[in-house]
Image (cartoon, rainbow, N blue to C red; front, top):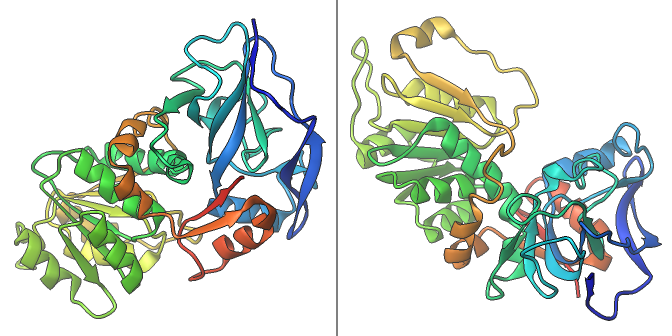
Length: 348
């Protein structure tokens, strides 16, 4: 028997890219769940840099002028299909946007999380959605997807006990990388940025030290915190063992390569929009391991337990909140450099 919360309206609004640079709240019918589906009333949805990219394009290929947005939703279950197990009306949930049968939610699929309601098709607990306790604010639960990106980056480097980690970039993913490194049990985490407010957030989430690379000598500060590492050809190196670039800025990689000790691991999770010149001849003697990271093959719900346990730490990441009716303003703020760090849209 399908379980339904009342009342569920007949129509809803969906934030939709309707043209280049244009987003409208398009009215649409509230989806009718089948026996294997769950209908979620969206209560919060984060905005990602890719959302602004889709807006600038005027929509994704095949969905030009009608691309629904939002792949970071959290909400409350209002309808449960008769064949769905382990999910009840009223449950608070986070959603895996990657497994929707009609395409990635908010990233080329036919549904989006920046909407009053979201249909989770073929709903399987622990695969397409996961419940979270009611004490976790929806705006924090909505960080689940980007924090899975951060967790995957840490997993790719293999960071764990005994490692001394340096994270470049204290934006949302960089802060998530720092938290995930702590969860992995590393010995120390240092965060590097040039924005004082971001460095202050890094301190609040528990980083052992922060470095303002616009005024500090990165090598000297890392040696101060992590000690010296094995030198090659008499060149001084830091004792840090794992570096993560969450900036996508070429100068950051040049800095990492100049200070990294022999055998260090360098993880790249920031999106580099332009080619980066790398002198591998210079790097050969350092025998660095360079890994890249994209998405979250297995981490979408791996990170959820830590968010639940440490939600106040994750709450520091949210910088700006906008009501759904102001979603256009939210998207502009998120896409404007320096205007906001992590924007979350909330629903009444």
